Length: 243
Image (cartoon, rainbow, N blue to C red; front, side):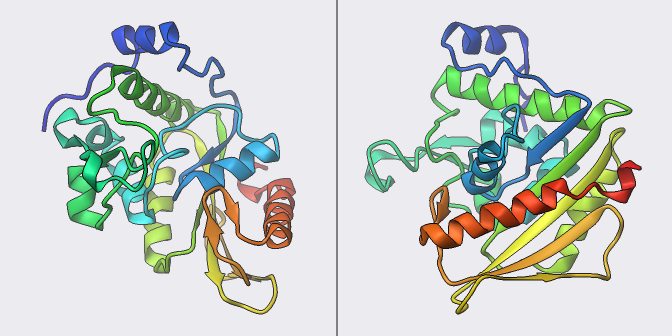
């Protein structure tokens, strides 16, 4: 595994010159998406909670991949030897399915990780990824920082995986609370089932919904609006962890 490229310096300068660097930075209180695709980050942005770009905002991932990223402090995600452009013939469209990650393809079956970017071939895309990693490291490694972390997936996830993600978050210098949303599609109406036997640092909501996720939202606009309100309500709850 090669040494990851610098998260500032040359690549940060390239990103700034090309207008790709988000100038907003982590503060004392942050809402952070841990995936598993753009939908979670999009809802946080809709609610004006997402103030800066992190590395898992805009890629295809899985809860186990987020656990792995936290476990090695995102070093494998940035490893250039693991990045690979998806050949044109294998892409699902001219501007999508652009890049994969060899390790996460082997470990989690992810055929595509970078949908709209290709950090294997594009310096600005790699700089954008590196800057996202730098920001989340700052948020997680700054003592006195309170982070609300969010993860949402429609793929069945064992409780132990979310707990392993929480374990990694609690090992950092900041104070971190994880809200995990397990979407269950195909139900007759929107329903939220709360798990009550978890830790103070972890909240699990099973959201039963009639419609499937499609890109940034649920297929039915009414279902999607309800999902946004569910997350808005959750964001207004202050975890006891933060006092």
